[in-house]
Image (cartoon, rainbow over all chains, first blue to last red):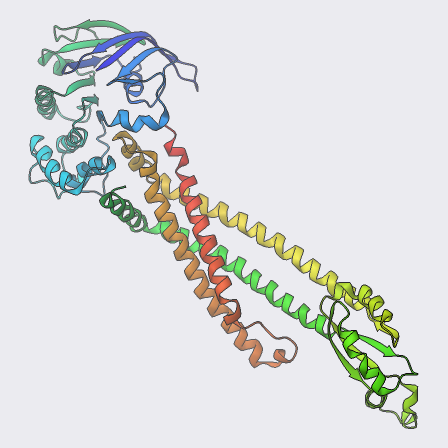
Length: 230
Length: 294
């Protein structure tokens, strides 16, 4: 669950005010699209939620963690409740598909038996059964993003944050991927998908939050991407 | 910590060494080179100190005995002379022996007719610490039966100055080399971690604790440091043995004696491994510090 109240964000290095009083609530089990043009503040919101940057003022709570007062040593525990997916997949090239996913479990101290049980299940869920021994560069873009989804999913996070997950994929692969994310959401995981692909957003009847210039300009349940980028 | 987790961390430390082979090779080579330079200098200092110790032993103090004393009486004060602080050993030389020595040294007819009464009974004394020569000379003069004491103060002073200069220069150079070694090692490991920043950012993203991220790098640094230390030791050993053979087998052996490797082997090995481990562990953990801040 995410609660953001009057959040302001200023980047120290440049002095740029990235967010001007953002209010946003995301409830458990929701599927939310966060849309907006480049530089509107989408990525800043993700960074605030994952604890990579800290807000100048306001209140932020993520899965029970108070992000305004969180200690640095507590950040790993917050991040274990989140699964993050990026546009560029961010897989480790020298690890196989299986190891890339198992890695996320090892990092949080899972036992070998738990890893052996869970990883094949998640890989099957994302449609990568039989690809376990392949390396990322041997896979298509869509498949690589599925590995990233499997990795985000493997520790059963309460919420998955996807930052432009279809940015490097063709329309058919993008649709397939979004259907996979919808399936994951139906299994109980909260989804926050940042994108600016209008057709894709409009194809799903989900909540759409539009942001521009550091402010939320619309928040509707009609599943329609009303904001024009161009 | 669970055993499987510890096993995983150690394994990933070793994997890191091989997956970034070139960087690991560079790190080991640089550690090795720095250690060999430091070690060679250290060995030079050890040998110079040994030479100075030999010079110290050659410095004699002569205590002349009162000419009214008979040889028996003169021999009787040996225990008193040996009891003087800083006296390492004292050897009695009678008038007759002194004259023989003199005549041998100055092989000229003019001294043939010398009477031994010209000479005095004497003790040839070696000191433990030649920096205290003056005090010991005064102490010896206090002994009943000692008429005069002859000590080469300038010689003692010269040797002490030389020892001090060598010590200061060597200490300064070893410290400078240590700092240089630390700096190069840390930078090399930093370069190695730079190529792995993506991996570190992924680890952070999936919720790895800083300790978990740091551990493989520390293990990697430790292994590379030990490896560098061991290789440096073996090469130093080979170089020193070669030098030892050349020097001891040639004419130079009459002038200088080198310390045998066996007597400095363990301190050298411990120092090399110690520096290797310290540089590796600190280099490894300081190199990734920047990546752990967020």
